[in-house]
Image (cartoon, rainbow, N blue to C red; front, side, top):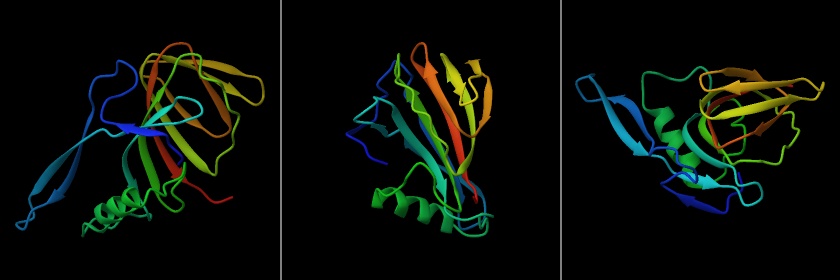
Amino acid sequence: MSSSQSSTSSPSNLPALKSYITTHDSAGKAIASTHPATWWVGANRGIAFDVVYTTSAMPVDMNTEKDVKQHEELMAAGKLGLVNRGGTVCRIVDFPPENVPLMHRTQSLDYGVVLEGSLEMLLDSGECHVLNRGDVAVQVSCVDVDSSWTAASVVVDGANK
């Protein structure tokens, strides 16, 4: 994903976000590590993304920390696209006001939850639906146009053609 800058604070007034990623200690007990959000602001449309976590295979191997290592390697390489083929991407998206819509059809199944604000989901059929805080979209082929700063949690699950 192309980006112009990164920051630990969102470009809007969204509160500071943290992710808690759980693993296990040597005794097999659950432990968590805390990660502050890293916002990547797109150069062309002003949309900001925080990648919370990725998986590179399904199903995920729950017996090792292989998924954690793969996530760290993918993020360090800077080669994550919109979709992580064969895996998933969980990101927080911060849409600026009057965002210019982009009609797109991804090779993914997207689950989006509006965290703050509202947004218009414009479909290529011409249908338009207003999503408000707490609303969920399960989507393929739509344009998201917001009327105010909007934050959404989006999980992208790579799919076959």
